[in-house]
Image (cartoon, rainbow, N blue to C red; front, side):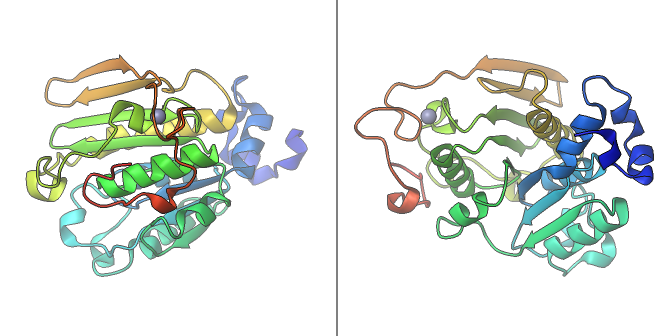
Length: 270
Ligand SMILES: [Zn+2]
């Protein structure tokens, strides 16, 4: 791939990437050729979509079945006041079209479920999970790991966030957290609140990880999880080790072959 594959406007738009030896015209061409699926166009999805589109990730799938609510606007920065009541995928697509005409948005106005996730994964190179619930989080982990698709995980509540990256191999999210906590024991943003800028930080780290995965550059968070505390302004890190007998990424007899038999409700237990 040579820089001749980039036109004059692209050479200008991405010039700060192109002058970096670590990206260059070849790296930019990789980004333009890439297909990324963003699950959720909310608090985390907003900065993820914004920065991946600005970076010239050529095809962005956006899966979300919600409409914009006024209470979203304190943190979901790709949506505006005039978008209240509209599907988030429509608002997100218009945002990207204004930002960067190089990017093709593929809107999926649907909830990601075990009935549709495998066909979605077939279409994309990397997944970034900006969902806000345990059922989707476990579903994304299980489907991506079984299909070998790398994905970025992020989660937020009040002043705290966590981020990691999984290679689509081992370890996986279930190595850390085999099952979701029982319903009602962990509050969500709707009941406990979230600092409006928090998803900006967490989503930007996720977008950074996606760009590095696409460029195959640097050290990702594969095998590490970051805990960010915005109140204390601290970043802590733990190792993420493969858990022997993990039913999703392990090689034991009880490894699941398919997500079809897993019930993604309550504790998402296998
Ligand atoms: Zn695992």
